[in-house]
Image 1 (cartoon, protein in one colour):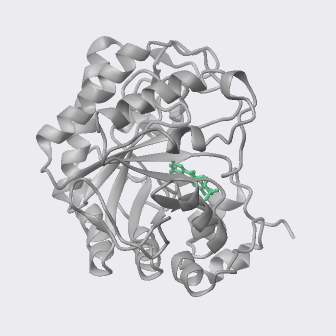
Image 2: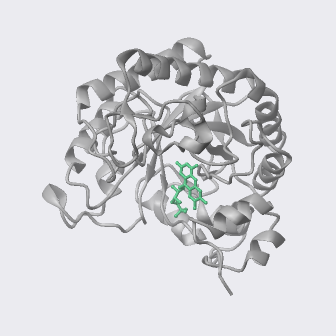
Amino acid sequence: MPHLTDPLTLATGSVLKNRFTLAPLTNQQSNEDGTASEHDLHWFEQLAAGGFTMLTTCATNVQSNGKSFTGQLGIFDDRHIPGLSAMAEIAHRRGALASVQLHHGGMFARQDLIGSGPLVGPSDDESSGARALTLPEVEQLRDDFIAAAGRAERAGFDGVELHGAFGFIPGGVPIPGQESPHGSLRRKPGRTLCLLREIIEGIRATCGPGFHIGLRLALSGQDPHLPELQDTVAVFLEHELVDYLDLVVRNLGTRVEVGLHTGQVLVDLFTDLPRGITRVGVSGDVMSAAGAQRALDQGSDFVFVASGAVVHHDFPHRALADQAYETPRPPLPASFFRNQGRSPAFVEYLDGSVGFVDAH
Ligand SMILES: Cc1cc2nc3c(=O)[nH]c(=O)nc-3n(C[C@H](O)[C@H](O)[C@H](O)COP(=O)(O)O)c2cc1C
């Protein structure tokens, strides 16, 4: 079994110096035009100094009409490059890799943030008012994902992660098993793979061989289409389409509740699939040193830490120093997050929909 201190090499040749990576974390602290703020730089500085071996940005939008959060980082225009370069430089100075999570909010984009831009999704959606993308728009979206990856490379990032989880639209249509519970999205697995492949092939053709591509997928024990998602992932692994998968589970012990695999540990269905050089990282309630080691014991190559990093930006250093280390669990007082150096906008976000701030 690998240990948390073991280095790990990606197919691109990049080396993770340990097994702790930062999961993508929205923080709503970028400038309103999508450029990185001083708070973004400070946050990256804290995380890199805290021992994370790869920092992934928050969900970063590739088209102005994909904006889903106030203060969301953007990568849809060259004006975003200088701020992104500063973020990549901070990671590299501390010996960490840096990755941009490429995102389009689709029907979850906010009309008040995208102005007159059309609200679009994989299909017409009554609840949000989004209309289905036209074919030229799907092609434009594909090109904009590729262009965004090119900007990430020019900014000095080591790679990108495609956000394929939670009903967003990395390829213009949903990935089997990734449909949002809120919409009645079309299911066209063949086309989905084809679009994702076009994005991936486009990025490979645009960016150098050392530039990595990750793909984030969310797994649910209640998903009746789990076998299809497993098949999709098997195709990705067999053809080594991406350099790593970022699999999101509620927690490492979550079991399948429906269908063929009922009772089995969800993440095992995916970490047990044969894989060549593609690396697999898992995120899901890793809030302790033991939890991180458990992820490796269950067959993942590395762990993505999200909530644990919001609580302690030096989670890796603490976990490596003490096998019994565990973070305090949110909700916690706002003063706790402020004392840890989180920005006012970040704390406000944690206090809102995220529910990390204790009311008392
Ligand atoms: C404050 C916060 C912001 C998040 N932002 C993002 C994001 O921008 N992109 C994304 O894919 N996931 C996002 N997530 C999900 C996390 O990356 C992670 O997958 C999830 O929280 C489970 O990991 P954890 O149990 O370590 O928190 C966010 C989670 C939290 C708590």
